[in-house]
Image (cartoon, rainbow, N blue to C red; front, side, top):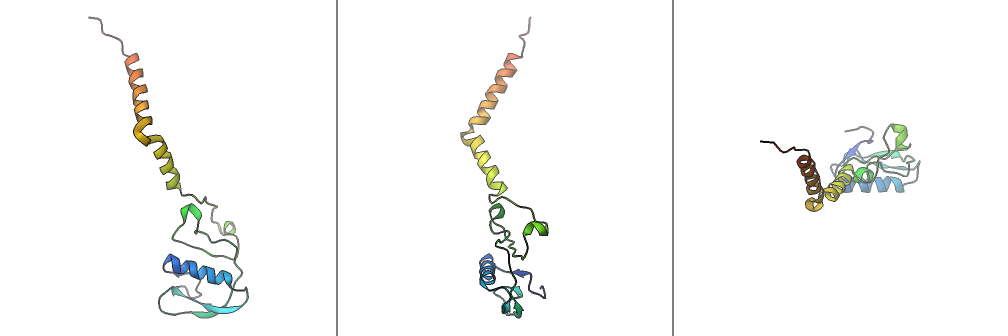
Length: 126
């Protein structure tokens, strides 16, 4: 457990609620900050609300992740790359469905290879 409450864990829905709560508070105001597991035993402590950037890293990046981050500086300054919203798996799945839908592309490739192979075979003279 992080003693300052900077690292929280729990269900994604609980994390999103806590993010919304923190972003709704006025920077500099005093509030109760949870520690450890959200939805678990109350280990909150009084703290001042920070000023957060208007972005939750991991909420939409590559289709959404199980790791959500809230920060007071842009995530690029923290070394996190800018990632697309669409996941790489979804992109490759679309590509595969396009190429292999109905097995048209593999059958066409097999036909071309068969034609090239038959064209290059010389008949044997007896």
